[in-house]
Length: 41
Image (tube, rainbow, N blue to C red; front, side, top):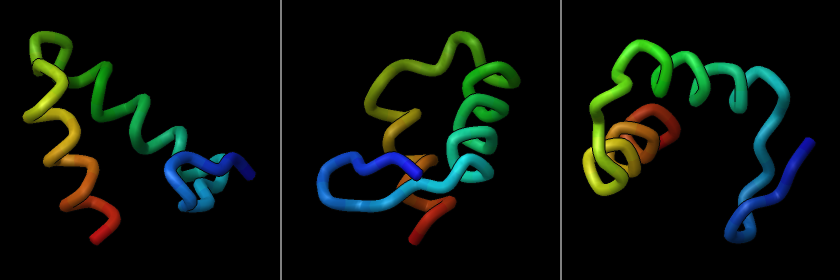
């Protein structure tokens, strides 16, 4: 489990984020951050 900005991320969460990045390699930081926020509410 990893903690970023006070939130705990499981190995599955990190894997989902990596998959999002791999499937959208041209996505910039802000749109990427917004998608991650949508994924995790």
